[in-house]
Image (cartoon, rainbow, N blue to C red):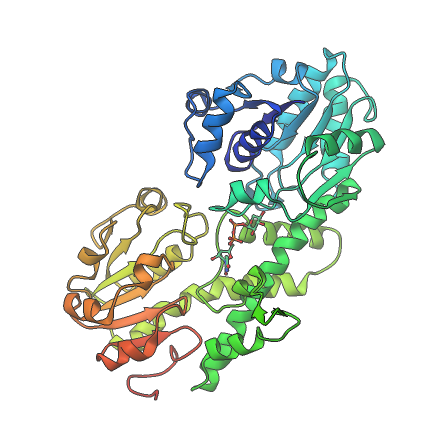
Length: 459
Ligand code: UDX
């Protein structure tokens, strides 16, 4: 099939490259000439494992090309997929890119003879596709939905695993305006080994939000249990949640082996969730819900807990060290999770901001995210970024593990001791082994364990 994808960001490009790899003829459209140039020279404009490889293979077969202009891409296509951004705004999400794009697609449809389905892949709040997007397409084209097809096809791509998630989906959700829209969209995914969930447009939109909200609930639930453990004292949230997730309803045994479903990895205490989806999607769903007259209580609590969680870190260090004025602190990890250079909504930002307010000397370390981080918080007198964790730990009085990159989880107690001036390790992800560190005389502070205690209180 001929498929045009509007927006070659993270979602659009992964979708385009994977569908081209599957044998469709793909045109990616993006306003940014540098993105178009990168795609046409078979380079990935963004860091995502495996993407450049499939982009090259698809490009070499002539199945993938890019351009800046929408009109010819629409006129030529059987399916047009909208994959532009929906950033947060005061009212929830900013739909202007989606609607501008829908209007332009509509205008192009006016000159198109053949039937074509327009599918929204951008994350939009329920009813958007069937109302605002439909209206923009109808206004632009002078045709009624039905004369062209309309679908909503949400993505479930994790950064760092997006290619694999696309190629081996657990479900393909298709919201369709009518039977013909479904039939065409099913052809897009012919050959994928996954159940197709056929629903109406608004249900498809809601499925995306409900999926992300559930995962975020698990994280904030874990952090609430962590706070209760901290308040109680001498209860380690890690022991608690590990035992909770041995419940066979979460973690069944098959042929004697625990399945360890991915879901239980969201049931861990930490310094909060981040990234381009969870914070934005939860806020948007909450705003949508309020706009429809229902006050969302769980979503609000999840967001509040997530907001507060990183702010615990500075006060915990102050309780141990006293004033942080002029004291060097190494922040290990800047990206919102390992395996990506993405710093959007990363918990390391509020943590660093709090340290700077307490006049600490902060060194942020990350293997990939230093450049992106310097764009959201400029290096300054008391703040530097480096990829070199040894240099960051040298002479530091505290090391704060924020992003569990494997290389930071492997730093030994001996290494911490040999480099740091005062060996206080704050484990914001509960991924380090406390006992060997303490046996070497390192002080260990863990979220959901002992961050509420004063020096020497815990045993
Ligand atoms: C998420 C959804 O998982 C994906 O299905 C959706 O389409 C886009 O949003 P992504 O933002 O890449 O993808 O993040 P994910 O890997 O789910 O991480 C989100 C947050 O959960 C991060 O803050 C991360 O630290 C946390 N997380 C992630 C966990 O707590 N445990 C994990 O196992 C993975």
